[in-house]
Length: 413
Image (spheres, helix red, strand yellow):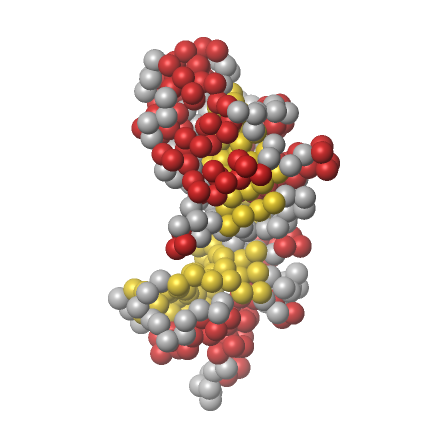
C-alpha cells in the first residue's frame, strides 16, 4: 500500500498548493491524488460532490465520512470526464446515471475502482468504491466475530442443505462474511464440492467458485440466473440478495431440495427476515423447513490500539447499561494519534445476532407471529441481540460506548 505521509496535509492539498499559482491543473494527476488520499486513509468510498461554492472531496473511513479537500467548482466537469474515461463510460452524457469499473495503475497500487456518476442540480456527483484485492483475506476466523457467533455459524455451514440469511444495512459486512463462508467450505471440502454464486456485482473472484453477475438490462435477473443454476448441479449456492418474491421462492425451494443456500435480505433485525418473506407470499411451513438461521450484522469502529486510554462515559450514556454490567465495565476510547489520523478509531468490528431456527421458533413461524414476538421467542431460547453484543464490545473496551449507541441506537432493547 501507499506509505503514510508524515504530515497531515493530503496528496490533494499538496497538489493544489504546488500548482495554485499557475492554476493549470493536470486533471489526471489531481484525480490520482484524490484516490491516493482515500487509499492512504483506508477508505471504502471516495465522494466527490458539488456543494454551493466548492467541490467537496470526502472519504468514508470506518463507515464515517471525513473531509479530504475542497476544489474549485469549475473543475467538476473535467474531473467527471476523467472518471468516465477511466471507467469506459459515455463521456458526452451528463444527465443520466452511469456506473463502471476501472483498474488503478501502479500509482494506485493496482486498487480496483467502481465508479458511480449521478446527476444533481449542481452537477454530477461521483462516488468511487475502492477494492484492494491484495488486502482482502476471506477467512471467518479473522473477521472479528465473538466465539459464540463463530461457532454457531460454523455449525450451520456444516449442514448439507437449507437457507442461511444475512441481514443488515449496506456496508455492514454481509458480502464479506458470505465470501468468507464460501472460502471456508472450499478449504474444508476441496474439489469435492460444487459452488455457484449469483451476484450484483461480482466484487472479487473466488478460487474454485463459479461466479455469475446478473444483467437486468438484458433481463438476466436474480430469479432467471438462480433458476438456471439449479440445472448446473451445485451443492452450495450464494445469492447476492433476495429482492423479490420469485427469487425468494426459488431460494427457499433450493434449500428444501438438497442445496445449501447463502443470501442476504433487507430487514432491520434477524427475526424480521421471516416477516419479510411471508410478505413475499412464501408459505410459513416452507420457511420452517428451509431456513437454518439468520445473522443480523452491524459494524462498529474499534478503538485505536496506539492511543487507547480508559475513560468514564457521560452519566446520560451510562443509563443505557444495566446496573449489573456497570461494575465490570472497562470503558476505553482513543485519544487520537497519527496512526488513526486523530480519530481515535482504527478498523471496525462486527456486532452480530445469530438466530438459529429451532422447534419452538418453527411453531411461532407457523402461527405467523409478529417480528417482535418472534424476536422475544428467539431471545428466550438463547439468542443474544445486536444491542447486547454491542454493549459487550463497549464494556470490554473494544469500542467506545458512544460508538455503540451511534450504530445500534435503533436496536436497543
